[in-house]
Amino acid sequence: MPERYIGLMSGTSMDAVDAVLLELESGSSRLLAHHSHPIPAELRQELDSLSRGPADLEHVARMDVRIGRLFAEAANTLLRDAQLSARDIRAIGSHGQTIRHQPGGSDPFTIQIGDPNLIAEKTGITTVADLRRRDIAAGGQGAPLVPAFHAHIFRDPQEARIILNIGGIANITTMPSDPAQAITGFDTGPANTLMDQWIHRCKAEPFDRDGTWAASGQVQQALLQTLLSDPYFSQAAPKSTGTDYFNLDWLKRIAPEQGCSEADMQATLAELTAVSIHAAIQQTGFVAHRIIVCGGGAYNRYLMGRLRALAGSATVSSSAEFGLPPEWVEGAAFAWLAQRTLSGLPGNLPSVTGASHPVILGGIYPA
Image 1 (spheres, rainbow, N blue to C red):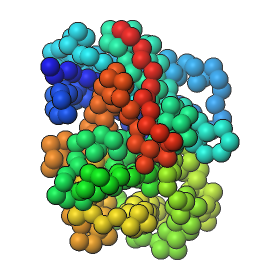
Image 2: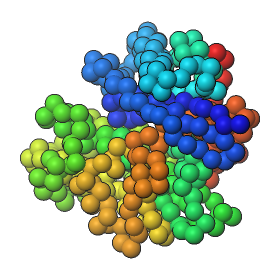
Image 3: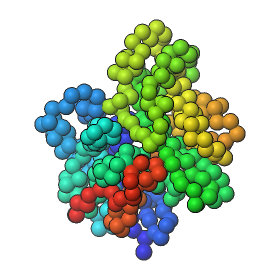
Image 4: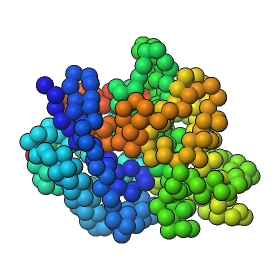
């Protein structure tokens, strides 16, 4: 019997809660409905502050409640739009909002807020949440988690593929056509986050639509090489990162003397995204026939053009060509991960996260 799951995802761009309704049955999945629930500007500013600077414990606790309510609103709106009720849904998989992700060092950790108790209470639906920390407990990075879903949806026995997710942070999943070969993946570095923050600072706009502003500028090669000198880019996988690392404070710290126009900076930040993704793919040694792009960056025409120029013989396609629009892939992944957890099945790929073994992810909060 098919079961319906909702995935809730707020990524590193922090612009909206993506709510995705997925029907899952015996290895197949079908997108039924989706909804983008805006994060109010004031709340987004607070989230950005929490993710970048010192955090007061009471402030974190209050934001946990507020984000939990917002996630519940997103799920309930999706249900209303789809003309369904709580009893039609098996479970919600809630990613939450990441405010810290530091998987290295002697005390590795990751923090996602958005109280799942509130989500379960206000929706009447069993909620699976806190999906990253068990992988970290098993020695992994806690990220990226989406490659397991990428393999479920996009792997093809006839074609070697890379799935490229361009959200706030970019990550890649390498998928050999031979099912006996391991899938790998990792975060490559900043994707939309620096571009979004820069255009918001300079023009009070949330993102660079189609990359038009970046296309109007000139890439500053000396600045680009300075940015690429950050040790994260040469660090060996497995690795993961977040906007608590790559942000405008990072930009100011690594390149205090920028000496270029605002448009040139945007062009250089776009090039940083494209070149660091390309370099990461080259570092894997994996030769792909096709690169499938998902995430909001798939709609940035300028960035997609630069990726195609760097891709060589590989075809660069949008995930929409394979039945799943780019902006809904991550939300769908967390719906799928909820099913894995409730079925007692592992949701991580140790070959991706570096965990010592596969683990069942998250905690279950009954309706």
